[in-house]
Image (tube, rainbow, N blue to C red; front, top):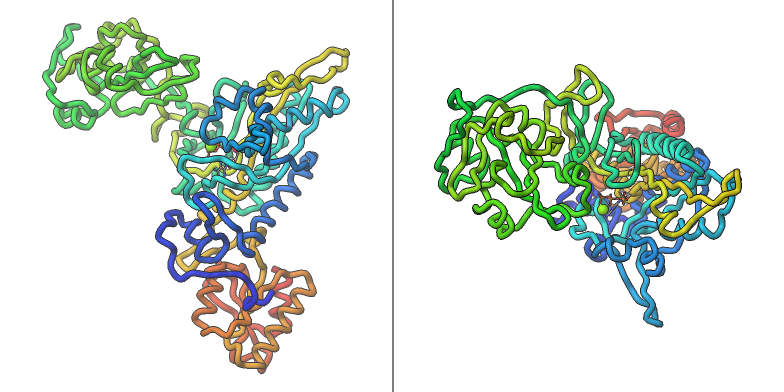
Length: 567
Ligand code: ATP
Ligand code: MG
């Protein structure tokens, strides 16, 4: 490809609206342009990379024995009503009407469509197991589309769905996808971790893993053992319960002590006022769980994990109580809630109950109480794991490890669905003994366009992109230093033609630009190998340089071509 004809509008400066490094690089290197918030056009370079990613995904899906289909983006609302998701999916679901005023959605995912398809086309256990996948555009009206392709409103996803006779079969299908995902992300040159994730009310045993690209911009926190391979999303992360206790007992009897604490509501204010560590306090939060107020108590240095609370209470909705509710149930403004004397259920985290004594809100404006001794005063609470794991907590799986945290970008997700959709949409098959049974399903997503961003978050330097070879838009960049020098141009064109003949994707910078501009662009777009044709062209000598190395090397023409073919 001749660069003078390539639509590759590079930019010197990153546009100010782009916060994420990957977003800046994609705009600067001319990979994408925005049409509307979270909606992008892929320019030729971006399209080429996206195709490479798709191809890797396809090859590994084929390898795993799955079949490719392509389902419509436009889906009748009735299907979503049948599954019950039309109402619960909320404002992320794009809705539209046709000329007959019939309602449709633009698919954010395809469980409904695939289940309806398989319901009518698969009827016998003899056809199972079966896994179908597609690579297709998804639509989600995200509240905060941002970071370029990382969170789009229109994005490319690979979604696969498995259908099995029983849960053992599901486990095999799931494991096969899990392994395919490892191969895919490894081939893309991604630094990633599969992590255990929260399966909500469905999913069952070992029900879901997320594949996280490690990157500071990631929206998820993952807890990873520094010794074994345990890794989990923080929302799910467990930890080893320790017997460590905090002792702030102020006298030897069991009497609680009232402290006047005007306007002191937050843990850091309490820490300052009392001159004690945050772990000396009991932090009480009032929630509304499926309409009923409850109190959750964690140690002052810990954070409530709402997903764990939600799962433990087996409720569908959990939200922090508003001020009025808090005042009604505690008799005090927010900031003075405590576990003593409440008339609502109290859920106390294990670490609170392991305290010898602590200081808690008094349920009275401007007061806290000290010398709260769990073994005496908190006998009426429900103990459980209601907090986030913390850095340094013991690993829940091995004896010696402790947890460290990373930020992660969720690039893939594997999930055991069970019969959620097959039951809702009545998708059954005849088993070997001739009776009808709902299909057992799994679903498996990869954000293909998000993956492009995630790779870029990990593969660049201050000059621009450094593509992993497996997904680079071109393998070789041939750069004649002066377009006006016919000898240089001829040799460069010769090299490009020779490489192309051998099937090497080659970009020839035939533009009449200053060398500085050409080299800057070349670094920015990050093609793995650069061949510079300069003043030694007349002697058949060129310079080659790999994008991820500092030093260039002078080589004779044939050596250079051999080198390019070998790499
Ligand atoms: P997130 O928590 O990031 O919103 P999700 O749980 O909604 O993700 P899934 O429904 O599991 O995502 O979708 C499968 C995959 O699609 C995700 O693992 C992710 O890689 C990708 N994905 C989801 N939402 C977006 C988006 N708005 N833009 C780009 N990719 C996305
Ligand atoms: Mg989402």
